[in-house]
Amino acid sequence: MFFLFLLGFITLAVTVSQLYSFTRMCRYVEDALRKPEPTYLPKLAVILPCKGLDPGFSENMRKLLEQDYRLDGKAQFEVVFAVATSDDPAYPALLKVCEDTPSVPSRVVVAGINPQRAQKLNNQLEALKQLSPDVEAIAFVDSDVIARPDFLRYLVGGLAETDTGATTGYRFYIPYRGDAASMIRSVWNRLSAWEMASPKYCFAWGGAMAIKKEIFEKAKVAQHWDRSADDDLSLTTAVKDLGLKVRFIPHCLVASHGDGDWAEVLEWTNRQLILTKVYYPQLWVRAIVRACIMATWLIAVLVTAALSIASPDPIFKWSLLTGLSVLLVEIFFLMKGQKLWQLVLPPDRAADLEASSLRFMMALPLAHLALPWMTLYSVCTNRIQWRGVTYELRSPSEIVVIA
Image 1 (cartoon, one colour):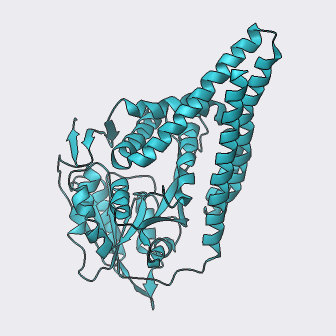
Image 2 (image 1 turned 30 degrees about the vertical axis):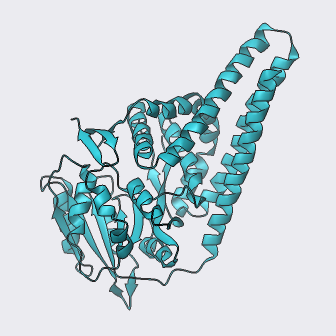
C-alpha cells in the first residue's frame, strides 16, 4: 500500500506540474505572437565572442550583418567580434566578413588570455571597451544563433518594457542523428525551457541576450564578469538584484544541432548544472529537488516491479501501473510541446522537430534512468570543462584554471 500511495502522489504531482508549466508557456508564446513587430530600435552594439569555426560560421556572420535592424535603410547597430588570439581560425574569416559588408560598422578585437576568467568572458570584456559612445543597448550572441532576419529587432524590442532588465532567446537542441546521448541532451534542455515563461526563474541565455547599456552599468555586470566563468547566469542575478525581470522572447528561440556522443553530452550537462549551482543557486536547487523526486520514482518503480513478480498480491501490480502512468502523462505533454515549439521555430527546423517525435517518446524511459543521477552528480563537484579547458568554480568571483 505504501508504494501505491507514493507512486500515486508522484504521478499526481507530475501531472499538475506539467499541466501548469505547459499552460503558462502556451499562453506566454501565444501572447508574444499576437504582438506587432517591435518599433523600439535604440543604437545597438552586438558583441560576438568566437573560438574556432563552427559549421556554417561565415554564413551566420553574414546573416548577423544583414539583420533588419535599420531606420530608413541605415543600420542602427554595430558589431564587435572578439577572439583570444590572431591564430584563431575564426580571425581571418571574421576580417573577410567585415570587409565584405561595409554598410554595417564592424571590427575584430584580439582579447588575449586571462587565466582569472573564462575565455569567452575575457573576449566579451575586451569587446566592451571598443563600443561607440552613442550605443544605448548591448546584445551578446553566439556564432550559431542568427536564424531569422528580424532576430535583433525582436531581441532588443523587449527592452522597451519598463520592468525588463534583460531579454533573452533560448536554444532548442534537435537530435538529427537520434542516438541515445543526443536524445538525452534534448530532453534535458526541454525541462529547463519551461522555466523561461516564469517571471521568477526565467534566466538569460548567453547565446542571445540583450540589455540596455545604462542597466548593464548600473547592475555592475562587467565587475561580476571580471573573475568569472559564466556570463549569462551572473548577468541574470545582477539584473534581478535591481528588481528587474529577465524576459524571454519566443521569436528568438534558436534551433541548435543537438548531436553528440556520451562524453560530450555528459560534459555539457555537468557544465550547465555547475554553472547554475554557482551563479544561480535558486534554479539549481529547483533542479535538484526535481531530480530527487524522479530518483525516488525510479527506485519505487523498480522495487514494485520486482515485488509484482515475486508476490501474487495485486497491490504491487497496481502500484507499478500507477508509477508507469507518469510516462503516459509525459508523452502527452511532449506531443503538446512539439506543436507549441513549432509555432516559433523556423519552418525547416520545425519540420525536423516533427520528424523526431517518435524518438522523443522512445527516449523518455532512458531519460528517467539517466537524468536524475546526471543532475545529482553536480552536488559532488564544482569542476567543469569548456572548449578544452578545465575550470574549478570556487565561488561566483573566484575560478581556477586547472588545465
